[in-house]
Image (cartoon, helix red, strand yellow):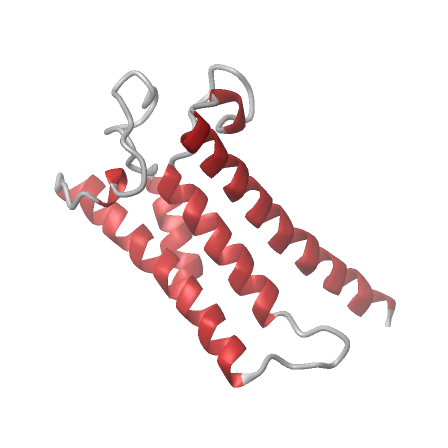
Length: 141
């Protein structure tokens, strides 16, 4: 019983942390506050797409997690899977943009970034390949 409680707490904490980091990243993009987008000053900043994917994955995890024996309903499961699938598609498209040298425009869909704000990125707004793989892998499984 104690292990189940710890697992429940871990899943709840992980989903809320994912949502919080995503919201902080989006707030940093919206208000142009670099400190909200980086772990430490001078490090590569999180992109808007990565922030949205973190929020979607956190919401999906939160909705799919069974609490106190109550399973998610059909609608809840559908919403959770749709949120994860959107994250997976964004990750896949970002990988195609990165490796295929394409510009599908999803990296500038929410916020336009200048080249100066995109320090450490291949192109302004494009999520890193590692973030894209994680988003793709997490969202499409």
